[in-house]
Figure: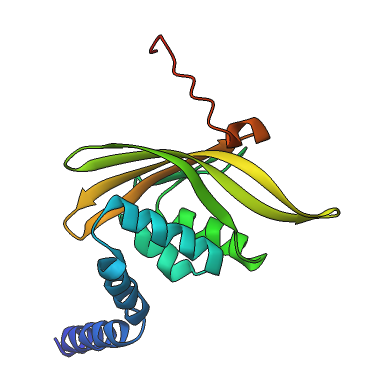
Length: 174
């Protein structure tokens, strides 16, 4: 009986210890997420600002806290879940910020879902100095109890031709 009481006290002690130290960054991230904004446009702006500043806390505050959120970078694998997505962006940020600028944003929005398809102009520094690379991206946002959050970011390699709006519309949907 004494050992059971000791275990209960130890569990209570552990819970207090965990909630006072380990969860503080999580509470801060949740607070930042709540402050990020009230529209898909606000979340998108915060997402690209986080890339520019290599700010992992701000970046993760843009994402929903769902197990099935997904991110695909150009030529990369499908990354599923907040932990995996965070890890990939931490690795990217270890090499510096990402200077990606959303351009030519087209939007499809409903009451609880928004899809933004766009061209990202990415500034890269190569042997010949600063250059632009182009990425075709789709960002999907869902309205959650905490507000709008990103649930998918899918990016594919683009070309300089993608930078100019061609004004060509498909005649056949597939």
